Length: 118
Image 1: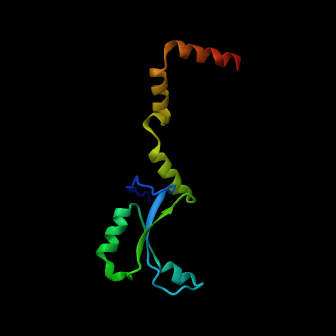
Image 2: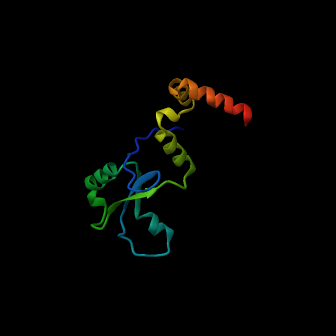
Image 3: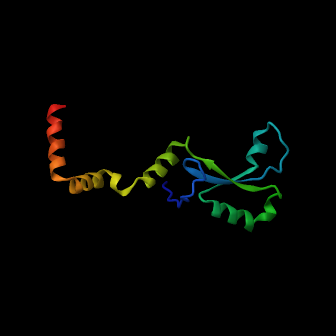
């Protein structure tokens, strides 16, 4: 299965951001089930998460908030985010076209000559 997502560009100082609604209405406990019940998400923009919280406020306590988290340690999400952020000139085919089209002729010759001596 493949999913296409619109991820917000506003990363809030985190790498590969995603947002969740945190509702600390449960009592602090070492029980994982209570902790899992405090988290709703993932959302891929703060606006989307805030809209969900506002639209269904009756499902959450007054302490519920939107919180930005990092997907840095998730390999698939990190790879997808980094591939999407690659500049157009750094894509494999375009990089070759870009550099050889705009590289001055003399400088290009110099680079080609340097490869013989390395």
